[in-house]
Length: 133
Image 1 (cartoon, rainbow, N blue to C red):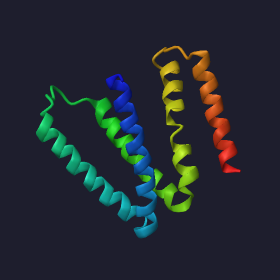
Image 2: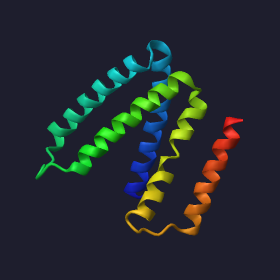
Image 3: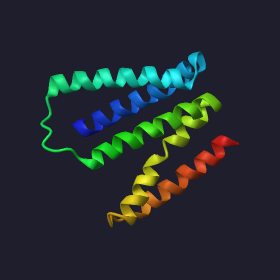
Image 4: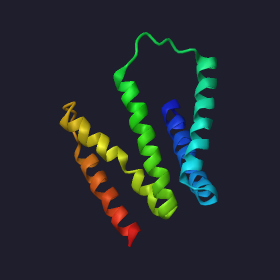
């Protein structure tokens, strides 16, 4: 099996566990406490990664800063949604974010959207409508 596929499956598994454990944490202590503790955990993992990998940081990337800030704000909204909604709907709905990436890549970067990607986006949106009924 190719390395990218194994890593993609590990990522899928981890994100699936993240959605479940996030909902359990929110139900147990509220969104703000769950978010804070999860963020501290993420910082510790990041520091461990940095100590192990020692990636060379040549310059500060404003895109990386924006990505971190946007991701954090999205995570806050995610935890709030988990507190107010059902994980079985919130997690798959938020997992539609690649559609936004594909659209922006098309509009801003000039990347092509294939027929199959278009069909996939439409089917993913239809699945959310069906799951929310």
